[in-house]
Image 1 (cartoon, rainbow, N blue to C red):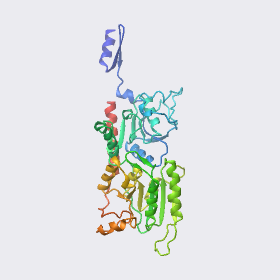
Image 2 (tube, one colour):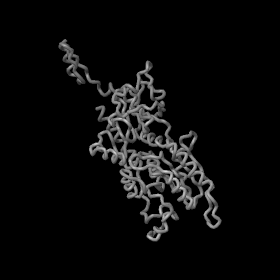
Image 3 (cartoon, one colour):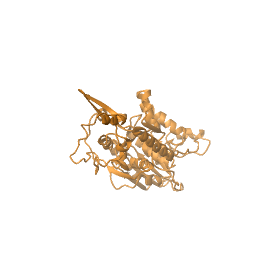
Image 4 (spheres, rainbow, N blue to C red):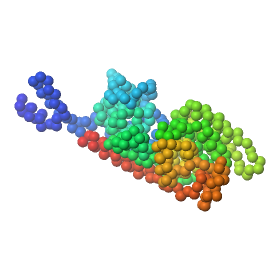
Length: 403
């Protein structure tokens, strides 16, 4: 008895439970025991979002393990999910161990890493963490709608840091987070298309960015008024997978219809735009977003569409922000930072209202898409370095948690 007890005492002790006169010593599981049942894989928990699929795939492949995409099972809206701690009410244990929030996933075959980037995919990520008792390393891109400690690693932006700092100075310095200037995009610079045949991609966001912008119908009017003064041969309008319903209706009536029914000016030498394409990512069968962006000489994005801004900047495309003059609070500071690094410019085309007052102050070549001042040359952004730093942080965090 004493020998057995002595051997147990030599094992790492996780907890000691005292019950009357009996003392039960529970040896701590070694790292090999904790992770021997995990698959050496990285799972992407996806809801087929056309934008975030690039970022999650980039992070997953950067971790160096085989990657598998798992579709999330849509869940009913759960109020106050951010206040759920144990999440017992959300995830019920099925008799065969099948996960309730992730398709084709069972609790006896869990991955080493799991990655998500949307609020729809978050329940699947949290369920995996609960089913494995924290053994699977969970990664979320952005600020999740739950306690920040419910996720092992957060990949946030400078804007996210500003949001946290506005709540409390200490909230911006998280042990489980790494920040980058722009959201992780997973994309690299491309060879730009010829500027002799200008084409533009207009990217419309969800309609709202809580850090300081709400898209208005007047923003649509300004976009149309601006592009109708530009010598464009092709316009592609990209709609976010989750647009505000009212903004979708306004987009169709105030942008698409106006462009297609533009009157022909007999005096002007500018040819009217005849090639207008609408790409709605709320509907299946659309071309990959990166390919759509690569077809443009210029990209116009509404101020709430930060993920697409990151994609276009990472690809080395000229990016113009519609509604930039109306941003406020943290978002104003954020765009000031991006503008200061020459990564974006305010969308204010030549021949727009009051541009005639600004033109005399421009000494260099006028940017027809941003005729507000002299601009420094476009800056470059190393998105691949962000990706490498994020992957290294996740690996170090994994070792730290499980050592």
